[in-house]
Image (cartoon, rainbow, N blue to C red; front, side, top):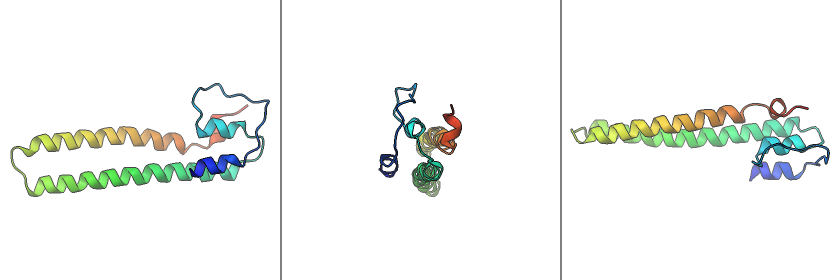
Length: 112
């Protein structure tokens, strides 16, 4: 919602086109015909903050799960431990590229 509110204020150029079917924030900012340097940094920090908070909430919940498994460890908890480890790996594989992509300045991605 914050990024949508930031992009509404742009004035767009009819001379530029985006070669993408995905209407994401970086292509939309490239269409703007005004200086958006500060807006770029607000958008990148907003995306990074959202990704970081989601990642930390998920990792914290898995840490509570791992502590619970450690305290009440029996033979049947190996399945829960392996499932939890796989989930942590998938979450890491999802959020690390997401954070990496959105921390690039948009002007580097779309240059004339």
